[in-house]
Image 1: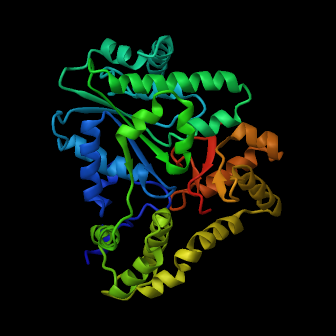
Image 2: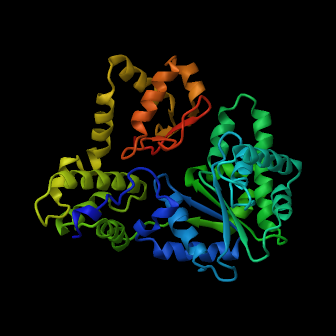
Image 3: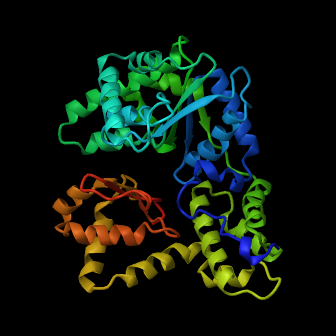
Length: 399
């Protein structure tokens, strides 16, 4: 083990890994190679898997570092990458992603919000003009010939979720169809070096048939995330522990591998349990002792760690009224599927005020408590300010 001054908790918990955390991302090397091969042969790559299977993390910490490292044959290692979620306005969100400094425009200052907003408006107009909008925008930006543009559409299923919720459904469907046409055209053409990656839950595959051309593109470029082998899962646990500066006992490692089994949807729950186990170990360990079974059992193991942690945060709310409001908010941002399974229902804060009757200030207090660092039960992340039009979402269906 390394000295205490350089140790750190290497586990992200429920949230996906971020792009700068690839040094903590283990056990997916074979899948990363397969993604790079698939993207090279099909410029439209659909990374599909169950909720919690690690789709976003695999793209951010696997595919993107592979591209930057020049490991995709036939292309340069110079990439401009725009990552975004469709949300309730996919065309605007695409425009905002393209207007991010250093994506299409090198001269934009990240602090110059007025200029960024102006370029966003210009891009939105270009995107709305025709199905060639993305290609036109890239051509107008005049990027160097050896540079590639990658659009990463994370949580593509939001396109279907928000369509169902919007009051002006016809207008939203028009926007969604226009958005899909933009992506398909950008992937099909060869005038500009544009590549498309989407991540999507597998239970939304059937919804794709409402968009002409999308099923064919997905059939050509689909990557269905396979189950990790026991050895790969072992690497995903022991690798970060070593990088973080500790050890893990064989007894605990075996218990973790048995507890997660081959259930890919439990990966975020495993990460959360490991994060909490590390926290317990940091506060209670003997000299030379690594993470052990007693630390894992103290946080409730995988079966109870989430509920114990959520209960701690719930109990920290200062008044009974806040606790009642908390229950109303969580019920409003989840719903039951046809099979009776709880699923996420991303909702704007302004709408939560309207449908729950909970005051805005209380919703903000609740959201801040459940999205703090070391928790992340709610999204967006804690470094993003909350506004009335901010969309609140739970980070994983296990909650």
